[in-house]
Image 1 (tube, helix red, strand yellow):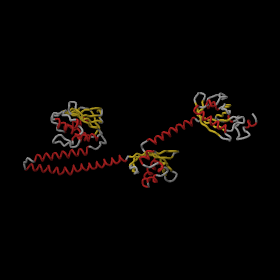
Image 2 (cartoon, helix red, strand yellow):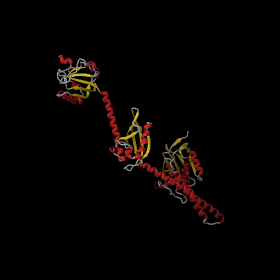
Image 3 (tube, rainbow, N blue to C red):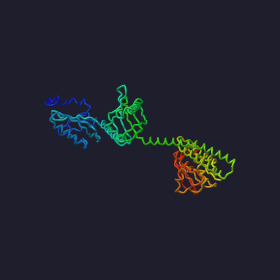
Image 4 (cartoon, one colour):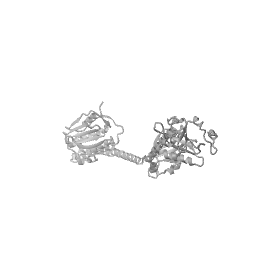
Length: 478
């Protein structure tokens, strides 16, 4: 070598590397390439990086070891270096074939300044770990973008600044669903505080919830009233803190429009209050004068014998029955929140003894426990037994049995209910007998629904009527 080659300092341009010392002190792979891409030298690091012996690739074309999909891009970068008139450095990432035939992601850095003998120094390092990490990050980012664009609930992100005495909160971004359900765009909310977006009062309430989430470092769920231009007002919101470096740096919020649900709940609550008030009127304001009328009628019957008195007595009795049935319908149809185990055979037997059944027969030996409200279950069976005797006669047979794993049937041998009437018989006031109140089967249906059951009427096994209750929690007795 001449003096310039020995010192690594050509006459023009930046100094060239000292090729005798760099390979010994570098963990990266150093390669010398001729202008036509022929490999003239590989440093010892090739064995650890690619698995080849140090001299295995000498005289080979570097292009033959570059992945076909990356080859043109890498060669173009190399040609750019060769044609440069000024000093420049090119960095390129690509896949290089290794000894076992697989490909390894590497990053190569080369200078446009050749060595004095016209060769180019390429510095290469393994970036497969970084590439794999980047791939995971890109996949996560894609999942994140997909989540933001497809989830129906509104997502919002709040930056947390705890540098001062008080926490400061600023919205950073929202998803498309948030914009749709609130009518507030990302541009309108980004970089602004809750009070700036929603006003002093609402903003202060939001900030208080955000502060609790940060201080507790735990998820927080709550309902809030935030009226927006879309007409939505009530929201179910969840907050989750993001901890970075030991401190909460961000809050991720999920909010769902529950305006319709809240309105329905308030309407139901109002209806229940009205129903309770109505039941109170029936129980007190009607029954009291009814009791007075019945007492006076008894006194009048002691002093006078008139053909008009029995019809009056029957009318008052019917009013009393209607009042009782109305109260049952109003009070027993509320949801059974805490069902308890009830011996099915025992409650059926008790109800059978309570009802005037004449010569009718009962067939019930299920050995089952039913989950429900015992008092309201009695109303179901008493009304069904009474209905069976009234329509089927004094010698009717009633059978209570399991119809399916989650279904119960009450069947009688009386006349069947026509298929066209099987829905209307459950309507309040529907009766086919002169003295009936028409509330019996309505009460049965209402109490069944309060338990979360479905009730339907089918033909009985022996041609009678079969009431089937489904979605019932039935259990074998221990």
